[in-house]
Length: 129
Figure 1 (cartoon, rainbow, N blue to C red):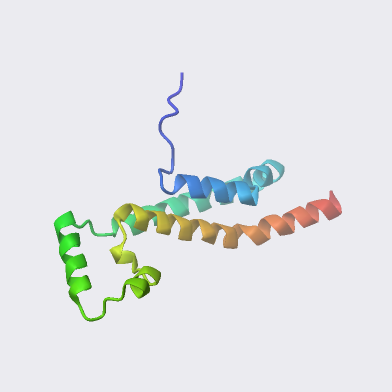
Figure 2 (tube, rainbow, N blue to C red):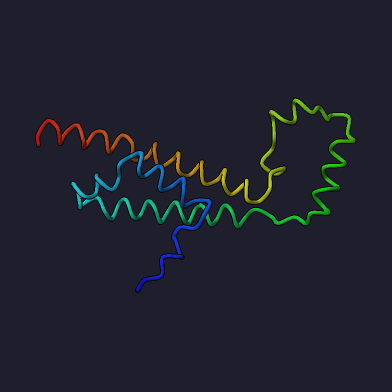
């Protein structure tokens, strides 16, 4: 009996990665072209490692520090509620939100990296069987 409670890679990378792989139809691609399995798996490992590296580099702040920073920012002469809503810096987001943004960035890179390959190979499969 296997334990399916553990997933890899962990959230917040897992869901956008699975969605992107489904959008690219990578499972069908490697089923039809098993020689590409290693390349696809290496890409997933690379993305996971890059995600871990980027999210571990994010400093963890105490909530007190965040409250003081927010107060100082709001007291400054440059505070404009609408402008700050549109132009949020990544440092002002929670660690979870920052990790989600990193995950989205990396998975969009997967589309750029594999989208053309999958489309091109599919076109060749249609032409040559």
